[in-house]
Length: 396
Ligand SMILES: [Zn+2]
Image 1 (cartoon, rainbow, N blue to C red):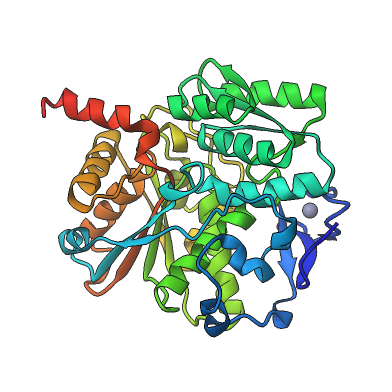
Image 2 (image 1 turned 90 degrees about the vertical axis):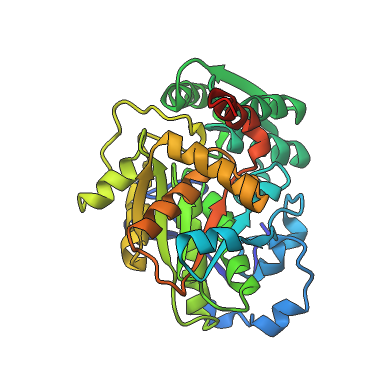
């Protein structure tokens, strides 16, 4: 199995045990904890100058900080998305700068492509013939694309409420799709039954060690594009937390490498209709309590039982950030305001980051010179009908 020079294998975030990448493919064999890629950072000679010589063409430009080399990767040139300055928002929020990391411009229109590239590479290296996951939609679309490219069969379990683009593109990429009535919890239950029976290779977030590993590259790009200046805050729309945990790992690694001195405050933005992370953060809990009646139009982040919540909550607290919930009306309004005012197309779920940032700004959380980065995790093209319906409903 081909791995990069500084990659030393996997480490369990719960018990600390280390495992060889060939032996441990998913959760910790000892305790069931999440496995995380480990590196010998002292041996990585990477700096701004060296990176500046490489084309800003895909996230594999940071291959020293990934487990697998570019030549072994299943890749569609994901990553290296734009960081768009949004001066009108900055002025409205009363901060120095607002930038949107526009992951909507990824191969399948969402940030999930980063993690799926690394996770599918691992699956192929492990000899998997079938990969599977349950997803609110975007990861289903991504797994179908990446597995298809790798010549692996993909099995995606999506709730019926997933958007049309997600469902259509799973089919178009040649994936096997099971649409399950109800919500994500129902899709997960159907997936759990199937995986037990079929023995497929799981690619769910935090089931494989590699989804958050790929997601971390978004943080490298943000900091590099800011000239190695660390933003004061990064606001991430949060469901299961793979993006947020990845970004926190990414900035922490840059500090470990001596490329930055400070770390940004990380904020989780959720819909008030399903906000188990926000609730746990506010109550000072180390892990969430399952959200009993999830009800939000933001299907992409409607995760009532985010099992990696301890990692998310740790990132929020260690970074000095926080968690914010806004209601669906505010989220839809924010997506529309950003589209109108800045031209950036934020997906409905992703726009929780915009409405959350507005709420945080109103609450005095940011300073007047602060640089605030919002993660736009998915393109508005995927659920343009939801945003347009909101406009029509208001008679605009
Ligand atoms: Zn363990």
